[in-house]
View 1 (cartoon, rainbow, N blue to C red):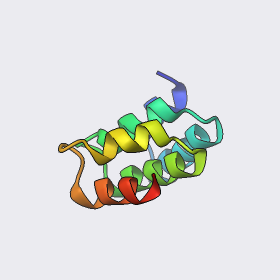
View 2: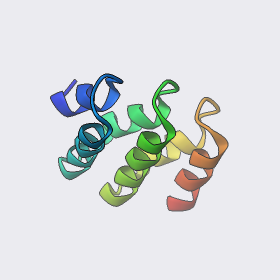
View 3: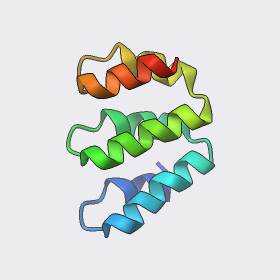
View 4: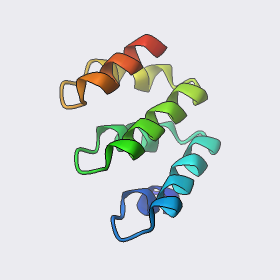
Length: 85
C-alpha cells in the first residue's frame, strides 16, 4: 500500500491532507487503491465519493463495474459507478 493510501485512511490525519492524498492517488492512476477506498466502510463518505470521482476521471472501467455490483458499497456510490461505465 502506498503512502498516499495510508494517509487517506488514517483518521488521525487532517482532512486536508487526507483529501490531498486521495487526489494524489488519482493523479498516479492508482485504480486499485481508489477502489478499496470506495469500498472502505469506515471511511468518511466525502473521501469515498472523492475516490470514486478519481476512478471515474482515471477511466477505471473495470473497477467501476465491480463497484456497481458490490452490495457492500452504498447504493448512491453504486449508482454513480454504474452511470460512469
